[in-house]
Length: 171
Image 1 (cartoon, helix red, strand yellow):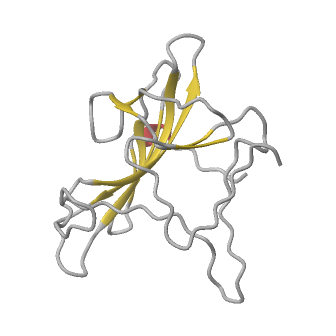
Image 2 (cartoon, helix red, strand yellow; image 1 turned 180 degrees about the vertical axis):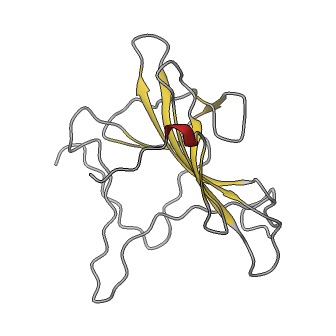
């Protein structure tokens, strides 16, 4: 169709650093202010890969695997402390390994963080021994920064930030 870009490379397609891949729109959203778990200050984030849309079809992403085995597709996060890609400096306790962030647009002031699912290193690491914890955070009714609500640590222990509000029910 008109305006379609078709790539048929015989090697990798490389998009230079500080440029981006925009899908579905020509606007590049920049300077998103994000306060992540484990930090107390906002930082500007400029995602280089963006899928932007105004409807269901142009604002979704799909990973699919069709294979005659038990494996499905994956989304992979990796963190290293070396200053170059593929460096081998090991991660340290409380390092963030990755997050999934959710935000909602306010009437004024841009998007506010609503929730975050984050994974951290839980203890000192060594060869073939990397312990992690998963943290679930949500923003309060009067807030715009997610606060830790639930934690699953490397021992499998589940901790609630406020056990006085514990309400276990079935859907």
